Image (cartoon, rainbow, N blue to C red):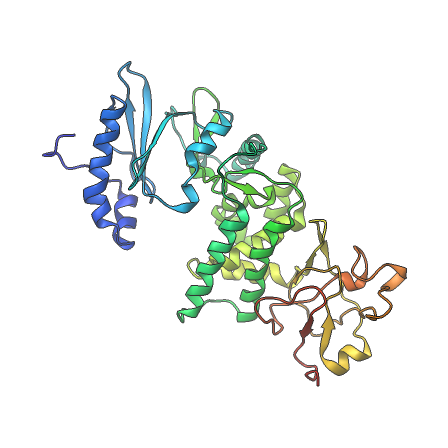
Length: 398
């Protein structure tokens, strides 16, 4: 690259780099890596796409044979560490093809298929977006090879939850009740481990990352592959459908779950937890979390299935001690419980038998439905199976 010519920068990348303290990388490292990639693959590189993304410099290019390609030089960040591996695994089925990749240490460079005409799916009506996104996700959900390098969804969720907790510890105020925030964050940590199915996920699929192409009607770009629960994968598309998300989050969750043949309650649980996790930087999502939470009282079963919790009666012991046993088989529960509702009577610890003769903690038994709620006092982390939850309005246990 001619050192006398200053590298043009996409607007979004320039703004993100300035706000995140990456100015030196942007002005020093990036131009050198673009030049090295151009020489390595014998490319003629054009000006970057505008306004571009926040983490990568992306521009049209042609190889020595004149084939139209795209050069992508990305700032290293954990979620996108295995983008090239994901594109190789998908091999062009639903996503752009990868032709070459190289890790330069301070940046990763990818040479990928160019989509023409390249129109974003976001230009189409949202109901159409739903169908296209669901169709693409179904194609991307493959079983990764045993030796694949992909990080787990659980690892990613724990990283994000830790970041949220550091934000709170630093004194930043959120729009959520602290109890509800802790409950949502606990669910965000717990859900990945309860998935009955684990597949290769895109994790960042939304209409802005789907382009019209000649080889196929629509192709996915910019994936951030992880392995985990498929019920997580429609979330980014749902979050980007802001008007519908705020007007009827349950309806949107039902629609995407139906298109993807997923359990609606599980998708709704993921949506609640993700809205809580994002609420510190995206305050409008706090209202979505509150909208979902009052009717979201879900217990994660040992088999990885989410079942609704149905309020029953408080036992005399519960009213007297202010505690409720979570039951042997329960893992967690999330939701807001009306102070006018009462909790089911737990089975006695000696008998181990719940209502209707079911073993305590078994699916369907009342003791299986553990209790923790945004409107109640919830300690962090939430109690494990067999632990007790203190409920305001009841005397503390002596």
